[in-house]
Length: 141
Image: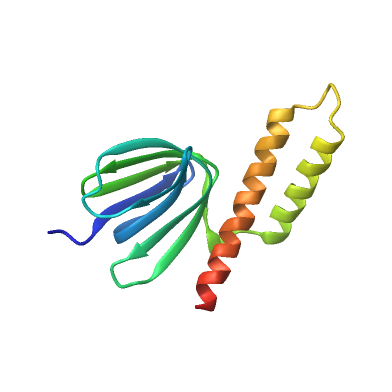
């Protein structure tokens, strides 16, 4: 029985990760997904959030994605992200600023405001902050 699966995480800009893993965790439209070797085939959309990869040696890597598609085959997981970054490369100050701007725009909603764009900006900034928090929690252990 196979104990690892191949994981590829790519965005429009770059390949973020390619390697073997024992567990992949991602945020799907219906909630958090945990993918292990020999998982049933699946295709789902991903919400803005994090993707966590646990490698065979026990090391974990976290990534932020702004959304995308997750495809699971029995031995291969592909994450096709709209945009993505390693969690370590996220700028916390910029994410906090984007969150504040989105919240202010939604609070002052006028007829010229694109509510869906402000909500998307808020969701992405919160997902970035969540990815940073998960990375900090992992580093503490």
